[in-house]
Image (cartoon, rainbow, N blue to C red; front, side, top):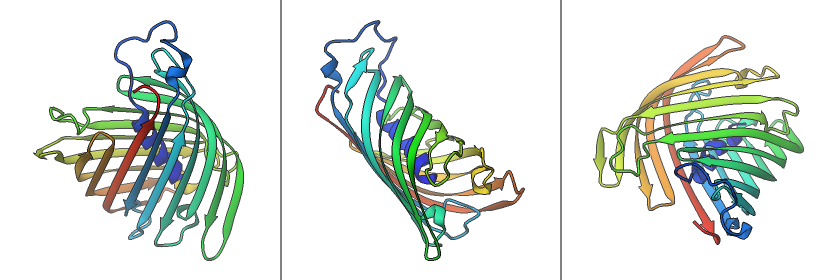
Length: 274
């Protein structure tokens, strides 16, 4: 689940190139104007779960899409895609050691500061540990959104932040489990070092599922400081540390601890009109 959810944040951020002002009433130019090959990859690593104290979780994802249709100035798009996600950790938990290749199609509506996507895919999920394996394949479906404001790359920005949410059946191993999760973060830039920025931040995650798994019904909140470093127009990296608390809503258990993390993302778009 963690892979898919983090994918949500980075896929949406990559595609959020919304048109300013209201969309036109008809398709702008030829339908073929929308054809392009958008892609993205990302890596995230760190001690991100207070309940898994000292566990280093590393996640990565690669996606290549083929945008075949666009309307309203290409702010409404249809994109078949293939993706490959992987998660590894140092403690050997099954939910943190998995691969999930997928292929599907999504419809996305882009706005000035974000995007909403509806998609379906066929996915194969393989969770593995030294003791037991879990394998399953099947259809996944989701609705997700991402909105951001005051990006670090804009030198006049002072308060970068973002929010995302997802609802859907996103895990073949957890067949029939409806998972909902939402996230919001707000930072303030207190110092710039050329293209880099020092950003104290706060964040909140809320999650729920229909099958009542303890690790998928939670509230995680905290804050810290990070350095954000745009790399050209298509890449971004950040690293930082903070303090977070996790409350499990089913069991009533709680944990807190230090969080250290690093994130990197890169996106591209081949062919088509920018």
